[in-house]
Length: 537
Ligand SMILES: C[S@@+](CC[C@H](N)C(=O)[O-])C[C@H]1O[C@@H](n2cnc3c(N)ncnc32)[C@H](O)[C@@H]1O
Image (tube, rainbow, N blue to C red; front, top):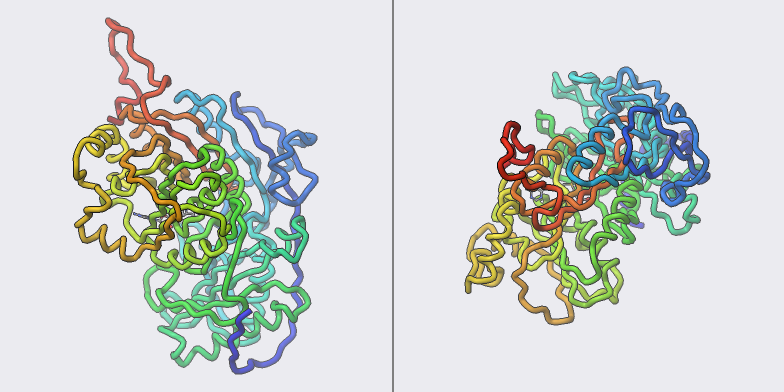
């Protein structure tokens, strides 16, 4: 553990109560029938979300048991519906959508319904005597305090209470947007549930929080740093390893003076506690610095990865676009290790994720003999160049969906493949690359070559696995792909990543070719309605 020694703040002792929520209401549903009638959900005898997913045959309870019952529901913008947390409103639409496209066994994993959020960014406003720590009220910049949030992992709520006490005792002025005064702007709380010294069944509820304080100053040389330092030390003394409950994993600072709505500035500083933050998902240890993207619902993400593994045959070569720290690609590399010629290529625009990728690879099994690489690059520029030589393409874009240039490349994949096979020097030939933006991306990339020599492979992916957090953009992208007849939909699964909201996470598997779901028109039949796929061509 690395501990930074700093001047001691006023000594104060605070006891924090942690309420551990273990209520769950979970199951995997296969949605072959309309959902207009309330469906019973299946509870689990265990508080671990993993075990919930493997025992869908436990006795049913009424869906009314899946209500939010949150005191902040009316005022907070975080959740949009209170009832039937196990079946978001969009689920019926999703089931119908996939059925029309030939996937009648669309399944939905309800995952953990309460205490699921392991990563939260909260605004801090108000005054030092009455700080507000929470989310904005819908359509305003008024912060709503949410101390009893039902979505937060209980450790986040406990850490928020500790922070509130620290702000009051140490007289820390929250940021004032109008006056641009005050210090504490936001806090990011990220929970790690990976503690191998505890039995597996206790790890989730004993999660520890990496606290990142967003401070209104340029750097640690600013005069106000002492205040920040005192607050960090307060959190560590009262929530660290020597306190009653070891709640705080570490404390970081982020420096941000901009007047816009961007939460984080570019400058990060580790202050106290363990520098390294690890989580275990998809069968691997994943390193997550506070600046890198991390999934908010760790357990649901783990369920999705377990499902994803089933669609990637042993020995596949994988390209992982919109890769973040490469968790998906590395998880596949680790579990698909049986053949030597596996390769995994991850592409990500945020360079902060590079360190996370590097660290994560250090904990992969040493027996792994794959060629693994991470590239700091924009997927939208020459997307085809990243696909050459891959059997499987995994995409996990932000909510707005795939970049138009990538959609274009996937729609035209057949002709691109023909060119790649016949031309001596295809434009996306990896070896003879001259374009400066691609070469730059290569310079900033990390490569861990396989010990087994690999042959040049010019084939393009036969399988596309689309992971989506944006239902509307997914529908658009899906129809654009299907209308090209270059792809057909083979499987689809939903995951309850954000219970209490309208969002669901989709894992959709596309295969090359038109498939059987696109019916040919009978000759001579009058065409009065446009084929739903044609609208997207
Ligand atoms: C939904 S996250 C998925 C991250 C990763 N797959 C994971 O699960 O940890 C989307 C990621 O896409 C990245 N991104 C957004 N636009 C991009 C682009 N044009 N090219 C490459 N990466 C991009 C974001 O920085 C973010 O890390």
